[in-house]
Length: 481
Image 1 (cartoon, helix red, strand yellow):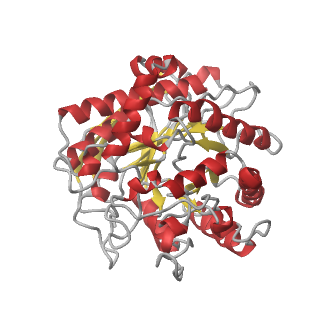
Image 2: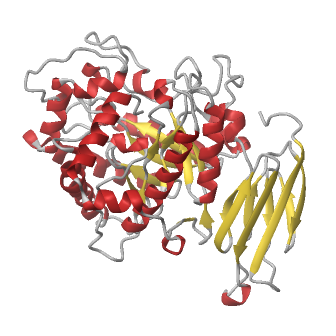
Image 3: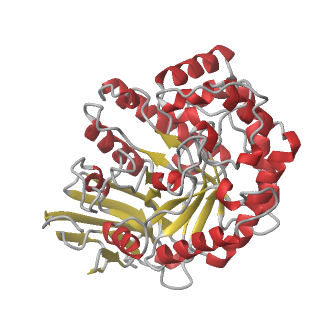
């Protein structure tokens, strides 16, 4: 997670001083709704995902290395019960952290037992209707720098120093960490080639759990080599293009290739990525930025300024996704309890996500002993920070039609969409709206509907192209645990 104000502000200043035309265009742009692309399920319905990251715990959950006192990357504690809880809470997605260091602990030797366990976990989630984005995670490059992700055999720090800093994001500026990223992006000793080969190996193995795997997020929060604008425009974009070429050998869009901008753009300012897809038939890209408020990350209060930054950030990201000609999903977001007004920040983010019809994945499904933003106590009960209660909400999971628009204010959910039954060769699939099973509701719809478990199923009305549903919460009757 990006959490250092000084780092971000310095980077923003450097970007602004360059006077980049792409940056300026994206900064000032408004997204065009007609160009927005959506995710779809196997039946052709629009898919909306509310998910969680699983999890911070995986980074350091095995016996520690002597050099750092930190554990090495492993598997999450989540299993059958946790998958069932996700389904009950309305989460239909997990962003599942895997680590290159665990996949390939020795160069050229893949740990198939580790990957087997990943696949087993994915199957468990799939049995509960939960899709998976496999996230090839990294933070601060490697374990020896109190981070995670890259195998130790990839470390090329040119003998430069590393002194542990607080807060943690400042460690990205340490000479040893910067040298490692510089040498990785320069493909020193073929390390970048080895990374692409490892991702290809993972892609092939994950065919075993098709179609539960929605995407592979090929690198979490990339850190730049050299100037940020040059890095995104050239180095990072070319890296993603190489992966697209590899992807095309295996599929034409499933699982998606999820790509992220430079990590500090998660504060909300434009990326300088170029994703000009040379193969017009390829539909496999998924834009997956993050969002963290750079003032809230310093435990500063959430105010009107922050709110305006968030609005602009959503516009920028939606516009970028339209330029890239692909759907978008926020891979991470969250707000610290130390920031006064953090619940308002949550509400504004979720409102804007609905407005922009974009999916998201919260950071993260942890216990508070593993991550201060976790939403469970050590004994598994719901924490009092309010995160989980805020995230469990009514929303459309599948839309049988086009151009959906919806709002939910905590009491009333309303949605409109288009479904011209006459244009289909057979009756369209119904629209499915998640509603916590323990909530008492009153529903109204232009077409036939029914409630089955934790879903309201809306059949299309053959007499009208314009569809509409309204759901009013009459009584929450507790929390769906």
